[in-house]
Image (cartoon, rainbow, N blue to C red; front, top):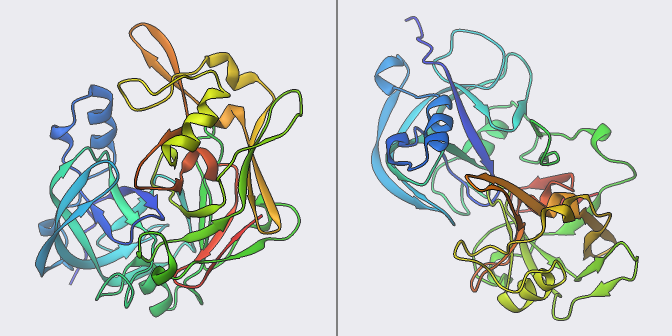
Length: 333
């Protein structure tokens, strides 16, 4: 039987979730630029694939922003290169695997109705036996012999770069200097929300302004989880407010974000995240987020307040190179 090839599907890599799905509902997006982006990520049509099998069951996946109602299917996934395989998946962050790598009969979701989602999502969190009763993408990589381990390494790249890098089953030693520091993942039963995520212990946060007079923020010894699917880094309101005040922001605006002076992106300062044996210094240039509006450029701080979530999102993770292994450990340089 010949295989059809529907075309590439671009998905967002997300360490904060654990399921793969495609086909966002682009027509539901309000912004023209968002709709154009969504339409460019590709569309998977199960009926166009001779190896697609519809599975029993639907599910609603809820994220920090947005949601997706999905129908489960199973199909072959082509990871890179060319060949007669029925599904090609690429990531918004560049996937690096061998040219012939592919997976057979992988279960994933097809979007039926989505809200505020610009692309499908490739969840890289804990899968089979932890969050799921089936093997997710990372599980299948090891199970089908594509990799020798479930571990993967992730470099998001700076905000001005066009792509990041993920390596399944290994790491890129050219992306960091020195050695990686091992940080134990906090077991779900000991984590703040009782959920199996990439929770790690953070010792404290400090500010190193241009004057080099370091200021340590109080009450910042806490568990945080690493979430590449979150644009912002989120802290309890009292901590977020204290950091924002040092960037000249009095309070969040109607968007829930802290407006700051755009000139801060060129100031040589850092926010420093201290872990056991390692400190990640995130420059102001990565923490100040620029947006173009009808009135010109507007800038916001890449740290926000949240009552329920404490997470390190892209504004922090872009300054790290991390190697993670589901339900085992994580490394940071």
